[in-house]
Length: 243
Image 1 (tube, rainbow, N blue to C red):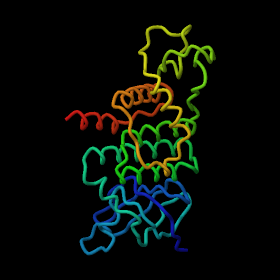
Image 2: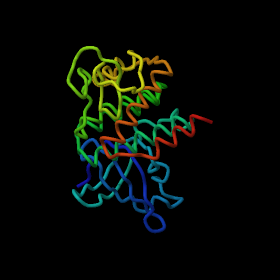
Image 3: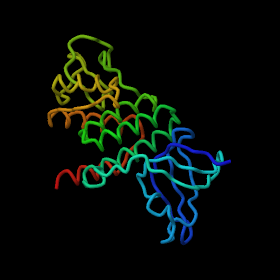
Image 4: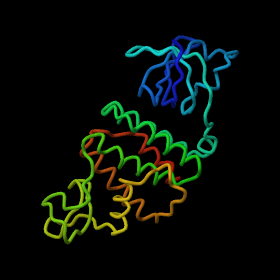
């Protein structure tokens, strides 16, 4: 039976000479594999619609636990602004990669809407670095390692907080502090805000570069130490940003 699903193409794999297997992240069924027969043929009407990062309605014969079969695609948003800038495209690649890995670990039903909100806000021109950090924060509870930003990660003290440290697993108080890098108080406030902000309601973001760098450094260390997820696509962003 033909089914209409809302989805986003995370990636594609060549299959024989003219077909593709789509890694499709869907609202209805999560991350699934979809066979797109003959779409690499020059005469195929779907040729331009099955590229990575296509966001649309996908009409397919869904088969649970097996490869589904693609029939047609209606693009919801071409995400043109993301494709026009190599740095934004790099962030698009990273958040897609991260989302895929987190879903494989958690199968969290809320992840699709969070991910799509991030993509659409990036396309609207909201700072992709901030949006990527917000996504990283919101994914942590899905991986079972959510941030606790109300007390010292080591002793539970709620007073005399000095800094936040990725290796320590969160906030550090004066008693537990041992020469870790001191971050600005605004950085901790922003991380708290990232936990609860509704991404779809964001209309403007203005965060100082130093705060963004401190947040990114903390989250990168935290992910490497506590999640087991390490993505080369994030390293690629740093290389592009340094050019």
